[in-house]
Amino acid sequence: MHPAGSTCMSSSSPSAPSAHEPQTILVVDGEVLIRMPLAEYLRECGYRVLEAVNSVEAKIVLGAGIEVNLVFADASGLTGEESGFALASWVRQHYPETKVLLTSHVADAAGKAADLCEKGPLLTKPYSHEVVLRRIQTLLQSRERRA
Amino acid sequence: MPFARDQEVESSGDSPRTILVVEDEILIRLLLAEHLRDCGFKVREASNAAEAKELLVSAGPVDLVLSDVNMPGGEDGIALAHWIVHRHPTIPIILTSALPPLGGTNFPFLAKPYGLEAAVALILLLLRDAATGG
Image (cartoon, rainbow over all chains, first blue to last red; front, side, top):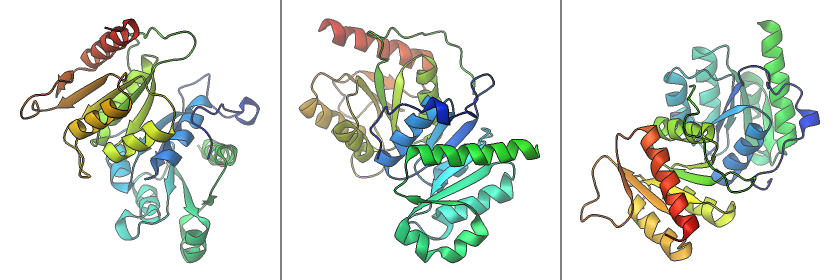
């Protein structure tokens, strides 16, 4: 885990939108000591970052009409309608322009291999913030290319 | 969600003041946190008392805590405030709720619904008091 306040590697954040309205990332993770440092890191990289504790909060944020470019959600632990996988499906159904990147502990990820094919990219925990940043940049750039 | 930067924050030196917002209602938490960031504060967000304690113990210093009173999870904002006073007696605490706590409270209180400007004004006042030992 990165310490709170770790600085963004500016050389690795070419897509961080400094000249335009910042792109919005919604970080969904029930572990505050994982969610907060990642959110602070991404803010330092130039993104607007919103934090949600779980899928219910994430849906409230999106349902409120707040434009979110990418949802980064933990898929560990919770199952059923509250799981990160269910959230990913919901986002793709209701907000197809919003990218989704899931993360999960390695053991959980192996157990959910069938879901991975259907639900898209997954980043295993523990992850480095730089890796998350690169994956987010890649996904948002692919979104821009299609736009 | 654009906010006017009408309440720029006086930071001490180069580092912005850190505010811990403890609020279980996501849209209130988000709105307040973003406004405070727009005003120049560094903001940490907790959805309940347990998360707030984790952040206070493990995530570095906090200059002020603004906490809702009624939150799920077994511990309310008043209990959290007393826990903070015991461990971090110099951190100013603001409690907020739709109704004043039964039996009153010795902590600065912000009645819901509150204006963002009112919240910032109270935060700035308490930070200045803390800096001057008031």
